[in-house]
Image 1 (cartoon, rainbow, N blue to C red):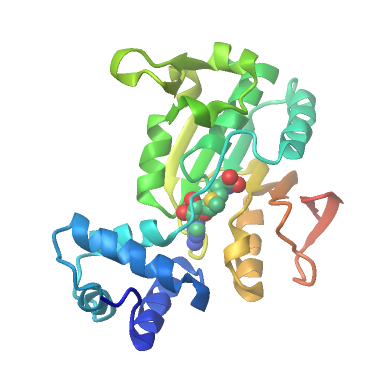
Image 2 (image 1 turned 180 degrees about the vertical axis):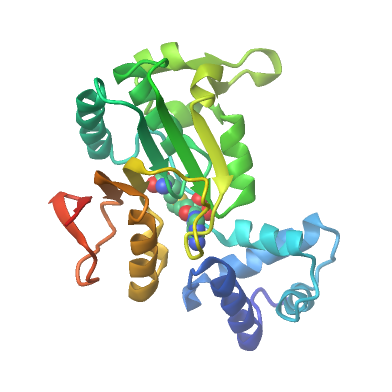
Length: 270
Ligand SMILES: C[S@@+](CC[C@H](N)C(=O)[O-])C[C@H]1O[C@@H](n2cnc3c(N)ncnc32)[C@H](O)[C@@H]1O
């Protein structure tokens, strides 16, 4: 049996995915696209004809929630706690400076399953205390990821980068049916709000102005013009002296953005 789509079908699916997410899937993702479609077809009882299933998407013959499910499955959600620690060192300094000021808001702008947002929350819980007026906003394209982030429950091995002291103070070790898992403490979860948002579209008006924005390991999926559009839209939400963190593998050079680098993968308006 064929294990890849007809070229025109692959092109149709990648065009559809690009329209919804802004992400271009390259030729080398053929097997990935086929595999994810095949699994989705099985999961929703659509049989084994992946080619026919794919064509239904292209013709717009599937309900919206199924399209959202496909987009979720084609998106790379890899993330982990305290990823790229230099940003957390920088955040610690900024948080300390904000201690005597008012509220402190941080946005995890492609929050995936929430590890980035909760890493920020633990650090602010440590440096500012849980009663200080700080808040984390987490947004992601994927509804499944946003729902997982709201729950805040992770396999214990995923928490291996969480400092032992933070694990003790901000996380609960699962018991009984939750053995082997770790739950973010209720007080920490109360400081983090998650919602869906597509960075390619106008952003939710409910988002406040931010002191720090984490826009990490998502720009890598976009071409130059789309990348510049996203960054422009995102930095409109920065406070005048706020900073933007990007992934260390993501370059903004040559994009003509109103930003200046203040350190590696750390930017300020200017
Ligand atoms: C690799 S994860 C990065 C997670 C986290 N920021 C980190 O650095 O660990 C990329 C995330 O970007 C999200 N994403 C992809 N395209 C997006 C878009 N157009 N708008 C919002 N989020 C998007 C994906 O759903 C995925 O959860």
